[in-house]
Image 1 (tube, rainbow, N blue to C red):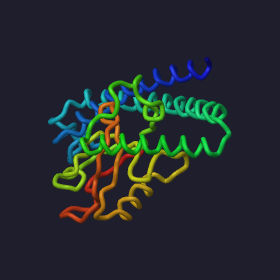
Image 2: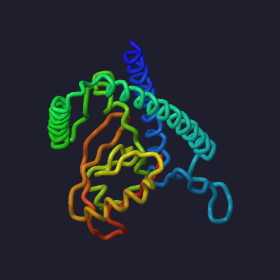
Image 3: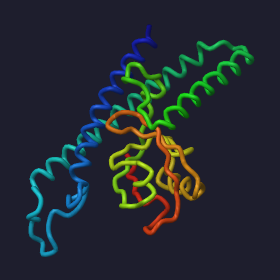
Length: 230
């Protein structure tokens, strides 16, 4: 009963987080549209006067709202992480101790997961119909970075990642407390130059599979985008 209640609570937290992420993405898209001030761009011109091409009060309000949403997102994510640990501990405690059964179950789960991921990736489709219908591990996947800039004609742009996509997994890189995630992303891209990297993102709150291939192009870097750690 406790595990059931905790799972229901975690699903509700995930749904609330998805709503927050959708609002965050909408704000980021508005602020980062062509000619926009971005997430931290100057609101004054070269001479120190307020920029006449943007609505400064509205920009400040959106930036303040984004800061509040980020704080709420972090709090909810931490609570989800705590619940995951409890649920995984309960799941491990309830598993049969037979090594044979454990190996069989693990292989079966990995096969099903790989098959589902490959099918979804080949069609670039949303995984699951609603948060309540997804496996708990997918629901509570923790995004650790957001795509906050993409250069035109870059590998990232051509391969289909979008501004505001939140990175759940980038190749072998995923959320882990204490990791230097930006460095890990750069290392993963360099190690896979010319090879497609599977990426799991949250787009408007929905998990999606994609791939991006780090490669040389006319611009800087191998991806032509920048990430911001959440």
